[in-house]
Picture 1 (tube, rainbow, N blue to C red):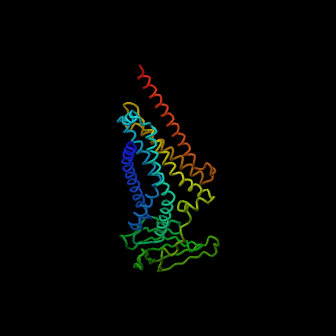
Picture 2: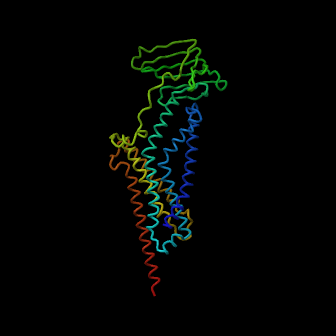
Length: 368
């Protein structure tokens, strides 16, 4: 119990630090990428931070396994460098004692990752899609910058301003394309001014001067028509589409389990694979941490990074193949975990052989 508690503390501290650093880096990247998107420039700052928080929650089924993987690698590398592993073995603790301790920590962590993948992941994706869709249907012309195409998420609306003298002021060279039913409406106006806000939802109607309106019917070109107006009041959000479309990542786990669509199968298998990856990566960190004499505690981090990168690339590639029907649902994306499991078994087998040879050599040297 003393050894188990000691190993749990040695793994827990770097795990918390690594996970915090990864979350900070990913959260900062999400916020910066959202702010760099012109369409998101129309969203309130609170909504952008909410979307970044949802993306961070979605990423936990990837960040937690990699944090545990490098925490085990870092802690056991230090134990090897300080000869604490040798001292434990001299006191009669077998290598399997450390394996069982890591396996207990990894099992608890894998259960948490499983809950996030099965429950938190679809909820966060669904909430994120709803927020993005609602943000795309709310237009505030006064916040738009000239020279940028503002397109809705579904492509049903595009707005472009050629020039604007000041923020929130009149704009010139206004282009609007909207889908209204089966028709496409194209509007070009010499200038436009936002009218006083009529509600608290960020909606503002726009008054267009010298507007040219073209209504295009792709199915029946003879029905297409044009209109010139000296003045025209327009609600840019009046042609918004329906509800957000179906997405496997936002679907419930129960629905995915009974679906036969390739995209649903790929997402279902991905959610199942995350706790398995957590266990395998944590176990892989133990044999990778073993260093030779005069090697630093960070000597094995290069191979460890390459192994994780290859494993993640294999899993994501297999998921894409399943989505497009290039490989059958069985084995599906399980190629990656199977390959990693073989590597883990081979690494532990090689380590067990080394341990037995070392004990045999020590016994022979102790004989008179």
